[in-house]
Image (cartoon, rainbow over the protein chains, first blue to last red):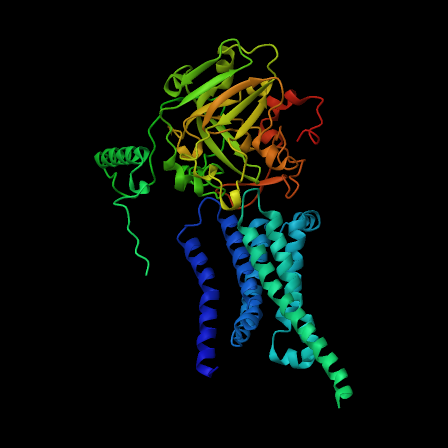
Length: 213
Length: 316
């Protein structure tokens, strides 16, 4: 991939990542958020957190299925956008929804499983954002860093469950997100098991090789 | 190469009579609109005015919710599960002609034409607070008359203990009654709600045909609904076609869908949480901060006696 393509792709991600936020801001500015603006803002930010998080988790399957390597270059940026959106989502909950009513929010985190799961998703994204720099990768070592960043799966699973659990009867959107996550994780599982089988076959071939000489 | 000889027209090209009839209605409506000064502008849709005297015994000191909010932020699953589905799709409902069957365990069952029903008793305006089970609320000036005199007119039999309300079942008028993906449906149609007979006879229970000085908009349950202000909003059945008096407690649509979340009584109660969220407070539409939710939505002095000796945590 040339430098120019990479820059173009990143500009695309920036534009795509900022667009929902700008649109939301514009709708708020023009008083176009309807009767319950706080709920619209919270839900929109939540939706986009989940979409971007799933997009970041789609980059590896892209490589596995289509043999493309360039999507990996966008993964970090997408992950950071997801983190930005979840921070906004959480801030809106604190400031607009409950207006710093800490005891009330604390009780909800403990008592309401969907809020507990949302908190877990947020918490598991914090170390990922904190170690997203190239310097941190070097300091942690590629191996530890990769292991740590498997927390992204925890975050995605918690986020999808958070949505499934909070949605009322008849709302089907969370099932589509759950389906998408299952596909993305499924592709990884299939790829991983194929690699294990290949490695075992190679090991068997290697151990039987001397007998033939 | 495949050569397909198409018929001159297919069955699907023949216009369904219902469709062109509704087109005529639409054109008639457009023509009527053109006669209204400024009617062509994209202003907030103004309903047909409906005169009613305000009953000062049922008023609130608070300002009514903006009509635009009360008519665009609705839960009416027959149109869809999103808040804006009812106002977007409301035009599919045809509130005339309409009849309401009042029967079951009564001595004089009768089917009323809606225009006859509206004239049975004097209409009055009452300002009620409406508390949704989703922890938001509104203040709405409704127009109607108490349900009690209507029920008394059909003469309930001694065995009648409950009143069951049924909403219209017609997927041509209520698009979300059509099954979706994989035959998925949000609720079991038709929508059924119920009240205990003494609740239905309570003077607060209002048979409602208008709001904000207008004929009830389709998205708010035209042409006729009930309003039971001390219960969560879903207890107030909309677009009613049948009112049936029964002995057994009716099995309501929401109980069938999720009985652990939506009980038969569903009295507004800050002390009993919904399994997934607290009911201790609510957001009044148009306000920023949440406000505490009142027992029986502020109508405790009038209705609490209906439930003396009952464990309201058990009968949620």
